Amino acid sequence: MIKSKFMLACLCLISISFISCESDKKEDPAPVYASGTVILDLANIAGLSPNVDETGNTFYTNSSGELFSVSKLKYYISKIQLYNAGALVYEMPESYFLVDEVNQATTILHVPNVPGGTYTSIRFTVGIDSARNVSGAQTGALDPANGMFWTWSTGYVFFKIEGKSPASTQPDSSYIYHIGGFSGSNNANREVEITFGGESLIVNGTRRAEIHVLADILKVFSAQNTISIATLNTQMVQGGNALLIADNIAKMFNYEHIHN
Amino acid sequence: MKRLKCAVGTFLLMVVLFSACSKSEEEGSKPFFYVPDGFPNPVYQFQNNPVTTAGFVLGKKLFYDPILSRDSTVSCGSCHQQFAAFAQNDHKLSHGVDNLLGNRNSPGLFNIAWFPNFMWDGGVNHLEVQPLAPITNPVEMDETMPNVLVKLKRSNSYPGMFEAAFGSDTITTQVIMRAMAQFMGSMISADSKYDRYEAGKVNLTSAELSGLQLFRAKCESCHKEPLLTDMSFRNNGLDSYFTKDPGRAIITSIPQDSGLFRVPSLRNVVLTFPYMHDGRFEKLMDVMNHYSSGIQPSSTLDPILASGGIPLTLAEKNDLITFLGTLTDYTFIRDGRFKE
Picture 1 (tube, helix red, strand yellow):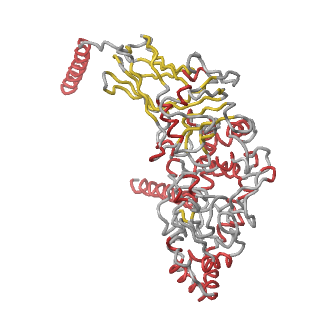
Picture 2 (cartoon, chains in turn brown, blue):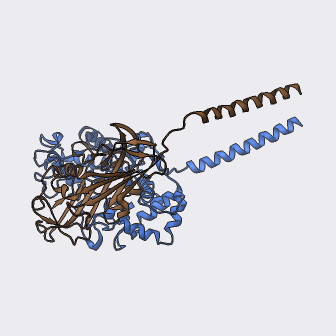
Picture 3 (tube, chains in turn orange, blue):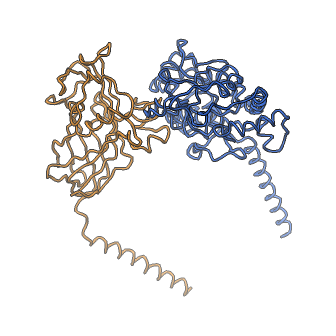
């Protein structure tokens, strides 16, 4: 009997100490910022045209003076990372997004569970890492049924633009650029960094945190290497011109503004 | 009393033990996938996609179902026939929809869980994405995966089979490919006369033995035991020019890979005629004659064949062919589990 009373007392003491512990914690200063969702809004544009008409009915002009239309514009964005003053703070796990101009909802990327705080830049990869290219059938954005997968030489197509151009020597005046390749010197993955022009993106719970980025398809033909449809109307294998176009793609993304 | 309890307890324990025994024996009698004695570890990781009866049955149904082709005329089984060790009997090149002809010979399907890549040019890097190639190739099944998904989802039988195999009736490319990997990956050929000889169960005839010795002296450097391939890509001197089909170079874009093709496994080789990536040789004697005196020079010719091929006397050719006959696995080609 005495024993059990003693036990009871002990138990009470332990509970009390636990409770007091918790109240101690409450007295600690709470974090200023709560984690939240960052929205990466990618607006596909064509030079001064504020959108890309993927019906193929609008013709744009590239740096070689060639007219071209767009009937398909799709690309993968992966490995999304948020930085503050050059230091990596958060990398979204399993961040694989397929942007498809024909479905505008896919151009707005949601990055959830970003730790509260301030950020000065975002990095992402246009492409799919090597591991996911060699690991069999994947799901979600990486489902081969999404039409961004080479079946004859395994690997994802990272970036796809198709359309017509009077400069093309194809009988149907088409041009087709499918850019991919994940290994060795043929690696067409390109990392892009977007800095917020000296401003800071604030993530704090449900507060709106949006990054607006412009993706200018004219730069696919000219950002670093000049690509002429007259000399290249079809690129559907890795290596060579695919790498030149990948270099251009890396430079087609430009910071527009952020919303806090 | 205590003694009685003890006896009852022992009895119950024995019952439990016995039933456990018989259960595991039943399950273990014919595992879908196993590593035969002497085989290396497989490349395909079945622990990520364990073979179940429901998954195997679903994979088999998909394998033999022409629903995977654009006009429902061609199934995987059309060009991969069990009696031919899942090659296509007597077809130089594979036939697809609209009677279109492919540009390569259908290889046999067995022991593919040990393959690091697939196709004559090695373009496919994983068992789970292999079926996508013939399904979407315009001269084979000429279908798209979105269409395949639509057709399977609206069928009466498939959603329930996917539910049974993967716990969900949601059909995705991944579960289709995993079911097919369970079926095809379970195609193991390791019970030929050669295997039984290696296991000390049977004797070879003197001609077979002589052929085996010749094989080990002259062929083994590429057709490595026990899989009878070293998984490499080589130019075996079929042509001097490769404009028609550059082979491995199509995948790697490396000029030195022009004219290189997969070294095929020689298991079941008697059944998988005609031979070479384009099915140009009808008979094994044609193959012997090629290596003995038909090697065509080129800059990418394999060094092993560069100094005049592999000279063989007629008697040696005959013994080699006799030995190759011991690589036929009748257990495999008659295995009811793989039957259409």
